[in-house]
Length: 126
Image 1: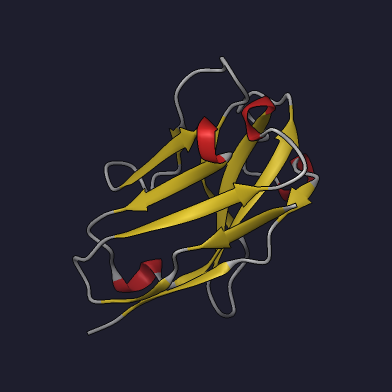
Image 2 (image 1 turned 120 degrees about the vertical axis):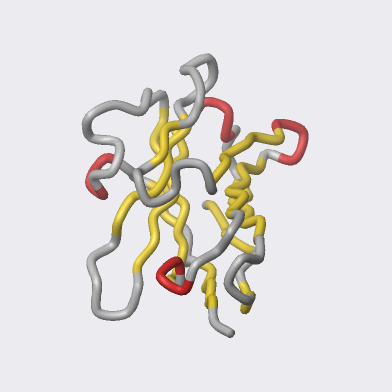
């Protein structure tokens, strides 16, 4: 399973680091995507990092320049750093995993991923 954490309330312009910790399997062999879902909206993909050796992370336009994904192999965790948070970043954030996948055309399709966490809430307001 994967478990997200690190969400919370933050003022516009602030930063958060979300964590996606895996148990029972080695995250390095999995592609990890981050999705978010705001109230009343569809779940949308915001980033994807390929399984081991698959290259750098890819970001949706909404996150380019503000989102950074990193892996910590020792902790079996993937992080999503979000800077310069905006009110419209308010959403539940989910990580999802798929074995051996390299981020490509289907990287933001929910059906691509077999393993999902329960989400962590990010609220941006003043």
